[in-house]
Length: 119
Image (cartoon, rainbow, N blue to C red):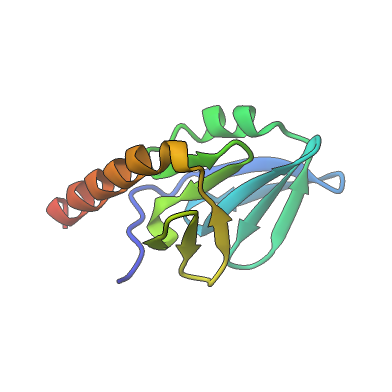
């Protein structure tokens, strides 16, 4: 299944004192580690001092879900939702809290249905 990208906007972040304009469609997931966030893309990983909550509100994109306290995942790249993790198309596995699993499965199914209807 090919990823579905509804928008072409960018996420603007500073990483190592340089400003990057990261296409949102290239972001696999964003991981919060301490006071930093790692933005994992198809090309490279960017480290930024922005808080995950701030990035999430800046993205304002229905393609991203919070599956765990410190992870924000792009649903366009979800390959499978297992019991305790989400497997992405790049073979990375993201932890999944059991408490939110049912809600995330529903959101992901709704996402798939809405994007297949718009094709």
